[in-house]
Amino acid sequence: MTASPLLAVRDLRVLIGGRHILHGVDLDVAPQGVTALLGRNGAGKTTTVRGVLGLVPRTGSVLLDGEETVGLPTHTLVRRGIGYAPEDRGIFAGLTVAENLRLAERRGADGPAYGLVHELFPELKRREKQSAGTLSGGQQQMVAIGRTLLNGNRLIIADEPTKGLAPKVVTEVAQVLERAAEAVPVLLVEQNLAVVRRLARHCVVLADGRTAHQGEADGLLGDAEATRRLLGVGRGPLAPFTAEADS
Ligand SMILES: Nc1ncnc2c1ncn2[C@@H]1O[C@H](COP(=O)(O)OP(=O)(O)OP(=O)(O)O)[C@@H](O)[C@H]1O
Ligand SMILES: [Mg+2]
Image (cartoon, rainbow, N blue to C red; front, side, top):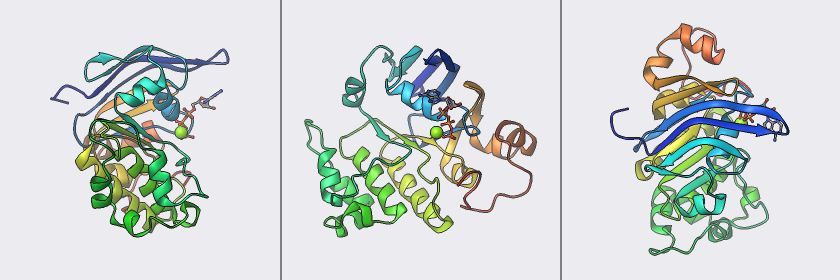
């Protein structure tokens, strides 16, 4: 990575219930576009994200635009501009699309960026009165990502947004993320390598709670042996946007 990273994680460690879940995660998030965070099930991807957000006790260093954030509480990190779309989307099913977005508004100098959200996802405008529980999986992801774009965030973290979705919807969500990343850099936890190949320039691979690889996404995905060793994915071409692994 040539430009200085937006987020620089060094030797991140997380201990939960006496068990070392992370023992040395290093990761740089590029200041533009999508950086992918990869690894097999249980490698520590979600815990890394939760550590960055201060949702679990952590040690090490996490610099956001050069400023140390380890030790800061989650609400401060959120105010400093980290938007989070969690693994389960965190949508309020009984509320409308508009209500879900309104609940995500934060007080800020410029006010919530509905213009940007509706420009990127016109479907959310069309469906603003629809109850979120009746949306498709892809549309719910638009709400989850849209919420992170409302508040002028500096970084969006999305945890497996394509997990469990049908291949056609995976394509839809990949397009959503591609558009979002034009506005704000994204750290994308993803197991679908076709999505990674399409969206990410840089990638970081975790194994057993540590960083096992960091580099250009093309380099890793073009290396069948490394891909198999690090991610346990077999040889052969990856069909575009087919759900893989546990999806
Ligand atoms: N709160 C917790 N208490 C105990 N163990 C935990 C806790 N959270 C995570 N773990 C364990 O830590 C390891 C890493 O979990 P994590 O959820 O970070 O992995 P992941 O890479 O996100 O996996 P997946 O691909 O399944 O989402 C797993 O073995 C998990 O069982
Ligand atoms: Mg996870």
